[in-house]
Length: 279
Image (cartoon, rainbow, N blue to C red; front, side, top):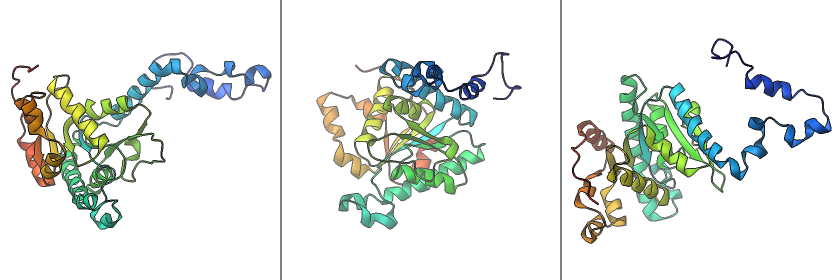
């Protein structure tokens, strides 16, 4: 922050950081107690500081997306293990190899939607993924190939992981808290596209459907790519027949098979009128 953008006459925190690094080396200055609180990693990672860390993860991404001019997003969920068709022989199972065509569908869908985003100024409908491999990589890749930006919301996992090479660097974020990552997936979402995937994909899909079902979130289009996959994994009819969901809950999403079909579905979508809230 330069002097012209500051809104107060007080000394800036960055100045004190630089000054604190130059103090004489004494037993007092070496003590952890002497560190500036906001620059003390040991202090910030204490259990009692969890509420502050939650706020920081919310604010950092929120402020960055505002500053980068991302007004809304098209969110892509999908399996990290789905390879691109050229590498389908690396899939761990034959069934996973057969899902590789969804990599191309995600890539083409992101390309098409990014072209529309750019034609509208580049601020609305920016592609957003989890920033990892598989379907996520395909989404970021398609956006880059269309000449646009895309968001990657990565998370620290026990095994080594880096964001895929197609995420826009200025829009590549890393999280500690799954809850905050999920919030940022949905806070700017104008549509949600769900490709075949595992626990993570289903977790995010069901959480979104629950938020819409309970009207904790406004209705947005939710597109499930690959009817055959989803109908083989989830027995929607049994959920309805058991009474654990209502028939209207099955209208919260729709199936598509191709990128072009998904684009057409988004173009045709209009928010349906709110019916009674079924308990």
